[in-house]
Length: 328
Image (tube, rainbow, N blue to C red; front, side, top):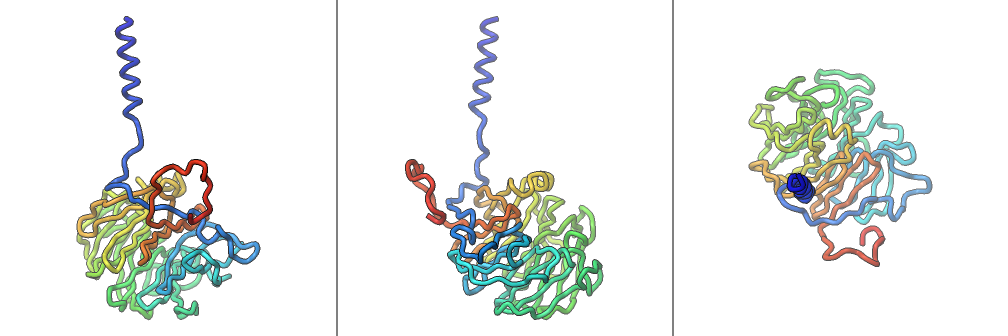
């Protein structure tokens, strides 16, 4: 009896010893992070504060644009690359801020999933035009139903819009907003969607769509022909492809975990574009991702933060210097 008891204790101890953190898929990415970019140190006007941050993007001048939903700041807040406040705009223009991207000419495109609209701003933050009818949900060539994201063809002559929470399609328009085509419907089959939440395009013109609630990324040709899909990357919130065809995503294990944890249990992943292989991963909450030419990764988080990840790694614990200033 004592031998059996001892064996049981040993087995339990061995099981406990074998438990531990799951390794970083594809290997650890050695980055450090500023968890309150734009707010530590706080250079915004008195009383300004982020609400939920739905998106972040960096323009060709290196300015960081933050799209946020709170009432204590303008919906779009602009900082320099070090997090110093520059300006804000957009008050009263949006029902519910969602997506944000810069095109090849430095124009800013945003999606408003509250008022069912897509807007294009000049590099000087001037509104150029609006697509969709404010407050009217629809599925024709003139309307959207809670659009989510924007992506651009390699030549910049056309734009893809994932139309997203209400509809289950991708819409293609010219750079000046004229309807070209659309594809997709509700479902789980090839070319069908359940929340097309993000869209991105590589240098060959191939279109990648995060079919978030179906826990996959679908891949299409420029006219919406289904090519293949990746089902190993979970419920992807956002896709970013650099001009050098480096793919980055912010994702979650599955759609239920994403919703239950309110985006807290996310991971940034570096993906090999040709195969979908995970090259590296690290934990981060997040709803939106932008990879800058300087090697930084900006994350817009519904926790009310902008995370600035930058290459670097501690060689030892902080010890007595615990509590370094942000950015150190």
